[in-house]
Length: 209
Image (cartoon, rainbow, N blue to C red):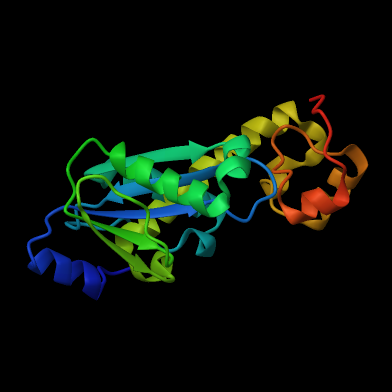
């Protein structure tokens, strides 16, 4: 992936430090939503950098390691299922992105977001939304990779505790395997019981796992 025209124009306009931001897990039925923010150096982009969905798991992990080694700064933030239910998934995603930017530990001049809803970033920083930004914008693609790798790791750890759901395979997304397990076992505390597929398949009850 090359540096985008938008990133170049921001650099020419005097924006030295540009953060890309993206989330993973918005469409899942279980687990947190995780956002990442990345400030690239632009001297050398990581090899194979592209939208996380276009990478194999192995390549995604290699790219993530390279991003962490080369980036000027990076951070992640997660919002858990109960808070997702309380404030809704859109607001949870926006909160995760804003907090990830806050955690960068350095001032940024602009933030580029994948999507069409901007989070509230502290400090009056310029924020631009780009639909499909993870496919077009280098720093957003880097954020998409880190968010995906971090969330996959979280769900694989949860799979050890909640083995009957197969989280290590589907990461909480509504696959046939996941929906079948949900019908059979009911929800665990990782499930977002306000989400329609969960709400329609089961009667929410006290979690016993």
